[in-house]
Image 1: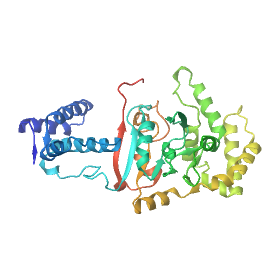
Image 2 (image 1 turned 135 degrees about the vertical axis):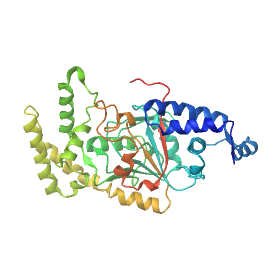
Image 3 (image 1 turned 45 degrees about the vertical axis):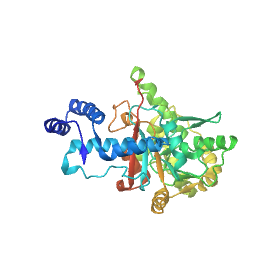
Image 4 (image 1 turned 90 degrees about the vertical axis):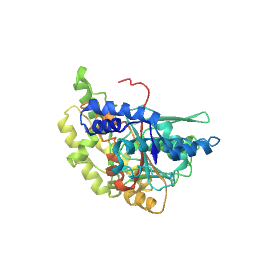
Length: 364
């Protein structure tokens, strides 16, 4: 039975505050929840402290689970007896099967890559689910610096497979360059990197269009990385884009590519696209890409079914979400938790731990 230093009327006040919908109450009750956490504990926690003083959490993952359980106890207390039996998202046992997610909770650059790099050593599958090469993680291992834009940071775990989900938009030249840099650094990725056949392609002219659109905004620029992410998603939504799997049907790919390129040149009269040169490049790499192209939805769900541990590496951050962020100064995808479901093709019931990373100060 949970013991606490709070009176019934205080608990009632907290519950009523949580029921309010205004941002002020949300912020206030978050602070109150923190205060509650500092003065309440359970018999179980006391027993663990009494017997486990010499056995502190050994890994970052252990610490995250402990934090999650603590937050759940606070939420259960504030929710009242009628909901106190609801299990936490993480479960009582860290070995409970499920997909764990690391997201940015601010505007990016919170240190997601570092956390994922540490956690990924304990996972079998690491996945990206949204965005494209506009994301960036730099990791230093034994003095070697690795820069990732499309690949999940978990690729450095030689026992893990890496999945680029259907929700990601992929610039093939950048993707292959990352793989080549891994080869040069002595990292063996063969048979460990898979890309969704449904992922849409970012072309060089998408990047050109991105830059032109940004330049037209003048002093009201959005701050795009000019990686072509927005225009690529626009092609996807306009249903005239191309997907990774289309490379395996060359006649279809060529016809669609020509139509898309010509449409962009008509819209931007000064935009020049060497269609034949671009087609020659994609034809030359089609077989290499084919070796990594699979139905990642089927693959991920099968891996889950056989008990593999799956980690999703978020890109960008929640406040850059196209729907929930500081619009219009946002990215072109949903880097919040919803993209895990739509960008990887998994049921929400399969999610376990969802971690938001923050930094102590914001630069935006």
